[in-house]
Image (cartoon, rainbow, N blue to C red; front, side):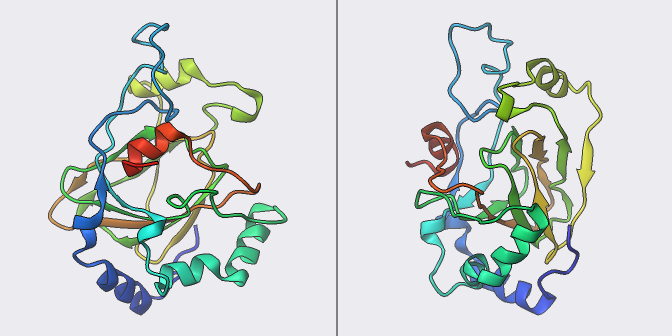
Length: 225
């Protein structure tokens, strides 16, 4: 985490840009499993592929981000990408190969949350824009699975969903930049408490070209494919 990566006056400008845009967001109205895949009717209902969690936050997709937005300017800035490459130890970063997933603004007003899940990409870059009065905690459990080896961590997923594992919490404030490897770490955002909407931007990159979200994930979080 990089504290104060974007100055407060710029954050205020970005928040003002998105004031009132919650009505343009897509709010998920269905549940999903932690793998962001379809359920498997051939498996027991207690299998992690069939256990459902709730995500109710709102989401503004990449194709709704204005071309002159400071968020797009930062995302496409060569120096920013080179900086991230240095942190992550990769040679190149690529946007998602779809029109929705590269830059997203998340809204979570009272009671809205992001359920437990693994990311499709190997890492995500996020920045808080507006913190809620309470709730909206980012919780995670590292190294739950190894997607590269096809180890899905079914037993540990069940244990976490049952509340039987220690969960870590990351606290961050508006302007703080967080680089998080969420492909193998199970993570969620707890429900917002209070009348201040939690606002967060996700800058999504991949270290390989041609990566896109699954149809299931696009349908769940964007309501379109």
